Image 1 (cartoon, rainbow, N blue to C red):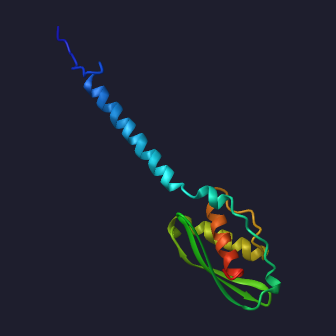
Image 2 (image 1 turned 90 degrees about the horizontal axis):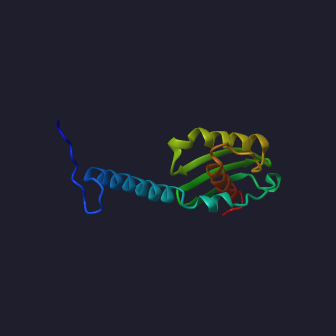
Image 3 (image 1 turned 60 degrees about the vertical axis):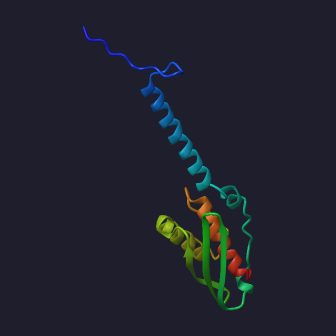
Length: 142
């Protein structure tokens, strides 16, 4: 009868099992560090207060503004005419391809309501708030 034996390391575990554990712990550590970096600043964006702006009191013109917090970054142009938000254009964003459709929905809702006080997009709360803040900053001349 054939017998299979595994060499054991100094810790008493077979070397193959010890190597598997090291790889799993390494992958978990890299994933944790990645998620920590990826989500850095999220709490600051979520805590933003989006103010109310009376567009009717703003002079006609194109207003430029931006907002940046870690990976959430927007620059926008906001066109106001006769006290109405006419158009909002994102001139710069660090993640357009990922959330392009969400951005369009947020802008459409702001234009329809003529207000920054919108519900936002489920699953894109942080993105929505960052875009709202860029628009608010534009209208406040910041």
